[in-house]
Image (cartoon, rainbow, N blue to C red; front, side, top):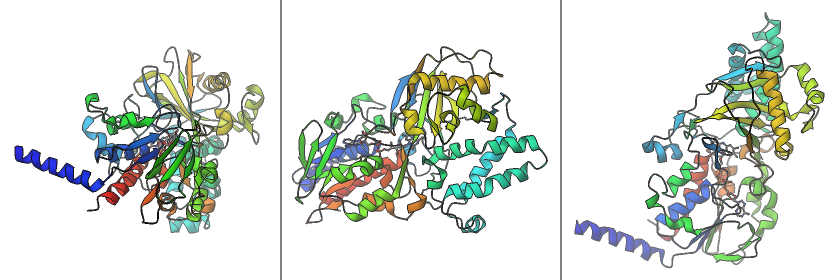
Length: 499
Ligand SMILES: Cc1cc2nc3c(=O)[nH]c(=O)nc-3n(C[C@H](O)[C@H](O)[C@H](O)COP(=O)(O)OP(=O)(O)OC[C@H]3O[C@@H](n4cnc5c(N)ncnc54)[C@H](O)[C@@H]3O)c2cc1C
């Protein structure tokens, strides 16, 4: 026993010795990647750490809010898959994650419930487009199109005219459902149009259930696990005390090759041996030119420009009572006539190219363990305007849709008594939701270029980059963000204690 303790002490003192002078490290951002980097470094005895966070909370694009009976997520919501998924692996022993049962019912603008075959055929079509990515055979059939949008448009009408050649009613409705399917597909990758989405991809899915939910605890649970606040609060890592809020960094001066100076909007300054920047690609796109002094290397600027960064939006409503079927989710198919009619009949909120914002809705579904709450997704090119709309108009728009599409089925629809909405696109600390591969600038290896550290004269990593967009194949996800944070922490750990 004593001998074992002695070995542990020796091992620990070796690491401290190897670290020499406990280098100073600044981590910009306390999203999943920033928390991953901070906790891994802390556990390896790097204690001279500060995390500078622009918002007044941790989590970044993981933002779980108590709403109704449980937590709802304004940002990341599902753990996508099991195999090789670091999020799944970190929590599997706690048995928190649950399969999400999304039984989507499609309603038509005249209030009728559409047959399941229409929904199934639409999803099958979306999957066939998805399968065309990186597939040279389909490439030929699609005429070497660069974007998902071009392939989608080339094949949609002919596919549904053929499927429903003997049923003109269903043929019309399925053709009218084209816009809904586009919204649905936009929701996955977040571009404003499918024409921006490349038909080449390096993204890898983790095998297994792609929609594991947090059973009402929210995705914030993963932050609690990393900080060791869950399952036992007494084991919390004290690095949590080194996170400073309302610290918006406006300048990262890396010109002197040895140390980096960082300036915040409140005029505080920090100097460190190493900086790990985890600001989103949206933030880098809008401010890398002023944020870094000297400017970033040309290759990195090129990656920042070429990788896509888009936005989706959630509107979450709480009702005094449950008037819908909580085992179902709801998708709405607008008829051509009603798409026109809504412009005058409802007429509030953003309109673009003759389309009402209401037609950009993807679906409504019940929140986990939260039977009085409906969560809705919106996607496409109107997100910036919808985010800035008043709560009154957003509620009125959702109510207009409920009464129009579901009024025939549910006779006791009530107004909501509370609403929360996401504003990722307009918030300057995010400027969008997640990265995607852009059709006009697709190239392999862009995330690696974004991730490449800036090194000083001796090869010492001075400014490092983490965050979902820097992951070569899990970009756009929480598990990708966490892996990227660990990657940069390991870079420093190996730099100071080479094997
Ligand atoms: C609506 C939505 C739904 C999503 N759904 C899923 C999902 O179901 N499953 C999934 O796996 N992923 C999902 N994602 C993606 C996932 O949430 C992100 O990939 C992940 O959270 C990104 O983590 P990050 O650490 O890279 O960046 P962030 O979480 O953005 O963290 C960066 C941090 O840096 C801070 N910051 C920015 N600029 C500055 C500055 N100048 N100074 C100081 N601090 C700054 C920000 O405030 C932020 O806290 C979703 C995201 C959104 C928005």
